[in-house]
Image (cartoon, rainbow, N blue to C red; front, side):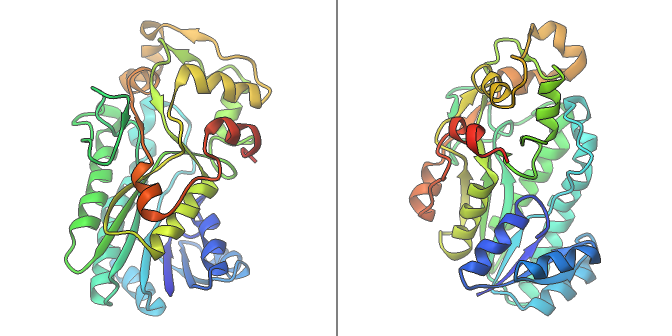
Length: 314
């Protein structure tokens, strides 16, 4: 098949391209910068310069590729500081890519007869924070995640609704857990590792917030599976073991050779991290990968973050 990857030079796209090439697909990858084209071509793909916020640029890129499948992996995450109080500002461009960029890609898909469309979404703090600590695709998203994340949740909802409801499109949404591994904040040379080594990432409150993780290579493998199979709909892509902050954060610090994180009461941390930061540490819910494993024929190589943090951080 001819596969068009929007955002092919990002953390996930750069791992996805070689998988699809190796599987025998003809891959077309986009970047906003001409300098990245050579890297894509070295991986065996055809590089296309595209401005995802310019509808004419998107139409021209899709027309050039003539794809059977479009994969939407557009994000803009450079410059992220890890401060939850700045979350909305730092995700502003990614939110545009999830709204305007998604719409441009879907319009181009319709105009050029592309039926299958696979898009990136996210799961964790987006889950309702009541009831079970592990959620499935059937459970609702939270109504209000807090002021710092409202626009980001709105953008995520837009992507999911547009991709799964556009006429003539077999839309698949992949709700990835928190990425770790090479090229991510949670890597040996990443932002989170630096914060832990400097003692800047404490366990807040009881550390009861439940997180679900996915190694970047496992996320790429699930995406490759969704290109080829799976009914339209939403799939959660995470490992097999959701875990509370109080459990995974000290283990991550140990694997990085950092000191054990200090503990701070929520009232003391709130002025520094805001209400959203408190939620990330104490009330967010994890997610289940049961549907993705069953219907995509996929299983994570790193079944648990315990193994992944030990051997897969890069």
